[in-house]
Amino acid sequence: RGSGAAAVGQHLLQAETPAKKEQRGRGSLLRWFTTVVLNAAFLGMGISAAILGPTFQDLARNVNRNISSLSEIFVGRALGYLSGSLIGGVLFDCMNHFLLLGMSNLMSSVGLYLTPVCKTAVLLIIMTSVIGVSFGILDTGGNVLILDLWGDKGAPHMQALHFSFALGAFLAPLLAKLAWGTAASAANHTEPDFHPLMLNGSSEATSDPLFAVPDDMNLLWAYASIGTYASVVSVLLLAPFFKKRSKHKKSTASAQRSQRAKYHKALLCLLFLFFFFYVGAEVTYGSYIFSFATTHVGMEESEAAGLNSIFWGTFAGCRGLAIFFAACLQPGTMIVLSNVGSLVSSLFLVLFDKNKLCLWIATSVYGASMATTFPSGISWIERYTSISGKSAAFILIGAALGLMATPALAGILQGQYPNLPVVLYTCLGSTVFTAVLFPVMYKLATLPLDRKQKKKHQKGGPENFTL
Image 1 (cartoon, rainbow, N blue to C red):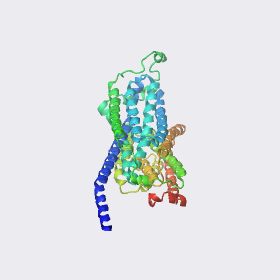
Image 2 (cartoon, rainbow, N blue to C red; image 1 turned 60 degrees about the horizontal axis):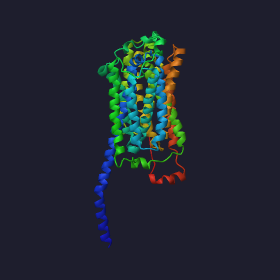
Image 3 (cartoon, rainbow, N blue to C red; image 1 turned 180 degrees about the vertical axis):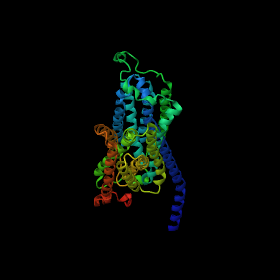
Image 4 (cartoon, rainbow, N blue to C red; image 1 turned 90 degrees about the vertical axis):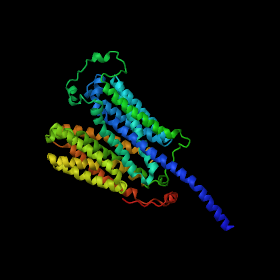
């Protein structure tokens, strides 16, 4: 009987193997398909976010405004992103992931289609806010979904996701100039600031249509092509939702890792501050390096533009290389290396603020060092505590607040102290904060769980992580 039962059991196992292999193959195929589509969505998000700069002058002319009086458009998009992060964090935990991301990308597509045909400033701000909401949902959901899909193996895919966004942001100005020709008037974009009365107030009071085809058709084609791309990506994101077995399941590694650290809330708060200072420093330097180089260092505009390009070029390039580095380096190690590089380069920028050669070298190192911190931080925290949609939203809100507050504060202080390199001081101070915060976060994350928590999560396997 024993030998017969063993033979029957072996036969059943052999009969089950093809079905399991097929099921595993389908799951792997869906996982890779979702990852590729998410990268395509983040590429489109990068293009959509960066295209506003080269086309800002044309959009302002389209609504009969000058640039200085239309700055609310950036505030509207930032507030939309904050709202989208909150909405995405709540909805991601209670509805189908593919449906949420597909609908948010479709909302972005509608906003892109309507942006160039808006004839009033209020409508234009509303459209950019709508796009900002979709950005917040996609950013929150995309990061969490990558963690759910790949678990401990998600670090290279997280780096690839954020590289796609950086690549899109890098390509947008080139496409605007070469393919669409919308930046032809960008050379004299400061001219309207000196002529605030482009149109009389009476002209704004006339009953013009809310939507109309713009005079510059290149502007329409630019946004329509990006909107079409976003629509195609939306269909691909929604495709798994309409399949019979479209219910998303976490990967085994991620499901086993669904523990909470002993100081879960404290870790999230520290990561909130970490991303606040990191993103604030990144955007501040990228936004003000051109004006700083021309006014404080005395560079020519063409040379300062090259300095700005080298910062974002090394930033995007290192995000691409980080995809391969993440396969052999732990996320914590990459954060430490990034912090050291940022700290050294920002210190040299402050000490030799008027040395052109040092400015070029330190800017390159600073851009390269800042590249991997954000995706590495998200991959790192997931190794120690569970990251839900609400947790991801909370972290990204910190990043969004840093994006808004730090550049604004640096601009105000730079205006009050024009002879000091306030921008460099801001970046150095923010880098010091991030360098101090990470060891504290690491110490909290590696504290042992209580006995009750250990028993509760014992089924998830041993927890032994190192930097």
